[in-house]
Structures are given as C-alpha cells and as structure tokens.
Amino acid sequence: MEKLQVLKKHLPDWEFLDELLLDSEALYELAQIVKLQDLWLKQKATSLYIDPLLVQLKVKLLSRQALAESFVKSWHPIAQLDQLSPKGLEKAFVYWRDLRPFSERFKDQFGTYGARPGVVDYQDLVDLGIFTQEQFDSKMNVVYDELALTSKGEWIDYREFIESSEVEKKITRAYILAFLISDGMALVKTDPLTGKISIMPLPRRATGEAKSVAISVTEGT
Image 1: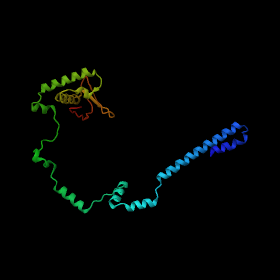
Image 2: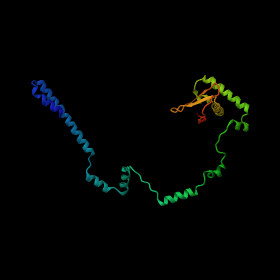
Image 3: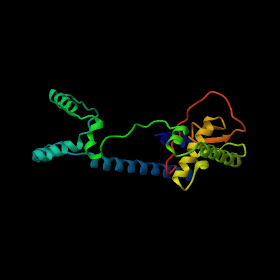
Image 4: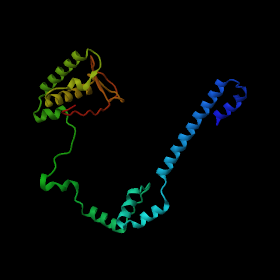
C-alpha cells in the first residue's frame, strides 16, 4: 500500500512515456507479489484445515484401544500429584521395621567390619615397624631437599611434585610432604577457581595459625 501511495503521488508529475512505462512495470511487480502471497496463504490454509465432520467420523471409527493410545501420545501434563495412601504408609513402616542395621547386612558374606578410618601419625608408623625414627627423619630431609631443588624458592604444582610411576612411592611422598607442611618447612595454597594445589619450601620453620587442607591422592591423579 505504501508503494501505491508513492506512485499515486508522483503520477501527475510524470510527463514522459518512459516514466509511465516504469510506473506500469512497478505496478505489475507489485501485483505479482500480491498474487504469490495469495497462493501461499491458500496452500497453508488448505494444508492446515481439516473438516470437523471428517474428524468426528474418524474418532467414531477408532477402537477404544486406538483412542486411548492417541490420547496418551498427545497428553503432556505440566503437573504431577503424588499421594501417600494408608497402604503405602503401612508398607513403608514394615520395610523400616524389618530392615537390618547396615553393619549386619553383609556380615554373612564378608564377616565383621574392621576399624573405622582414623588418623595415623609418624609415631604410629614407628610403633608398627613401618619406619624407624631415623628412617623417617632421613626421608623428610630427602623430600625437603628435592622440593627446594625443584622449586628454587618458587611455587610449584603439588601433584606434579609427588607424581611417580609407583603408587606406593607417590603416597609416601605425599605423606611425608604433609609432615613438612605441618612442621612449617613448606607452604601450601589452593586456587579456589581451578582447584590447583601449589607448594613452596621455606628456608626455616615458620610459625602461624595452623589450618587443615584435605588432599586426595589416587593412582590416576
């Protein structure tokens, strides 16, 4: 409609044949656009329209099973209501009443459980014969010297430092390193964004507020 208004406005000013021919061509192109839009609307209306009588007849001819299946396929509930019946309460009560304690469920297959997880310090290791006091002090000095040599007074990655192809050696290094940190001979920090753990040796024992840092050591990490 805007194009037609523009053509109508300038029509009195056009005196030459070429201008009138251009005007006619523009009107023809506009008519073609309107024609194509009309065809598009008719096709869409034809594809979307279904005779109500045809739908009613098809529904009447469906069996109960087919009608139920159609309903289930087209049913999309947006809310769900759960109710706890007296029967359900009774079933739950019986289940919890007869449930054996967790410590007894697998006793027949695996026997009794061992001691709960706890803390082991180096004195416990000495008492168990795993280390002697001299061996433990020697290992601490070796790990400290290696840390000082590797880091050169800078922060280094904790996991890269304890990494070893032997799992036992890796865990031992992590254990001894924990004592170096506890004794103030090394510092540890954790990046809260990346989770990266870094360590750095200290030239002498440091004093300050003690904090606990949990670090998991596994075979793959």
